[in-house]
Amino acid sequence: MELPADHPIDLNALDRALTTGLIELKYLRMGPGESMLDEGPKPHRDEAIQAFQTALEDEGEEFADHVKAGLAWLLNVEDARFRRVVDRMHVPYPRNDPEDLRKFLLELWSSSWPNEDWGITNFEADRFTISYRKAL
Image 1 (cartoon, one colour):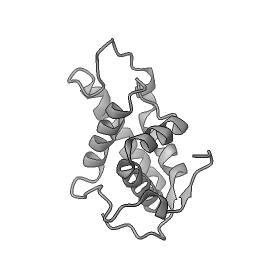
Image 2 (cartoon, rainbow, N blue to C red):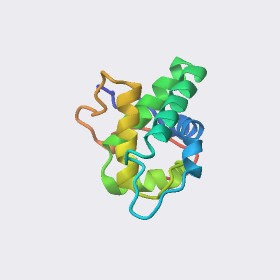
Image 3 (cartoon, rainbow, N blue to C red):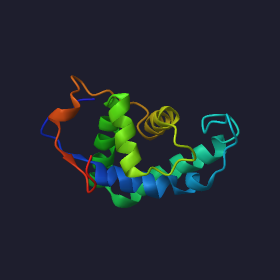
Image 4 (tube, helix red, strand yellow):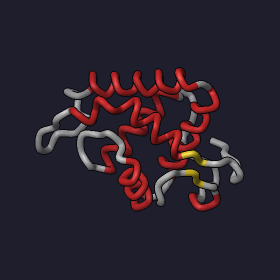
C-alpha cells in the first residue's frame, strides 16, 4: 500500500469503526485456552466483520479511507506499539491478547479490502501525523 508521509492517520475514525463493528465481540465468553480465531467463534467473527463493513458503508467513502489508512498503519507498527495503541483504544475483543487481536484485524483487512495489501511501502510509524483523542 502506498501511503504518503503527509497522509494523516486518524485513529479516531478507526476507533469508532472498530467499536461500532466489533461491539458484540465484547460479550463473547471464551474458555481458557480458546481463541477468537478457533472454528467455534467463526460465526461471531463473520458477523463482526460484516458489522464493521456496514459501519464503513454507512459513514461514507471519506470515513472508510481514514479507517483503512489507520488500520494499515496499526497493522504495520511493531508489537510493543501495537499493544499500546490497542490498549488505549479499548477494542471490543473477548480477550486481551494482542497477538490474537492482530491476527483478527488481518482477517478483517482481508475481508474488507480483499485485493489490497496492508503493508505500507517504506513504513516508518513516526513519519505520519497521528490524530487521536487519547494520548499515545
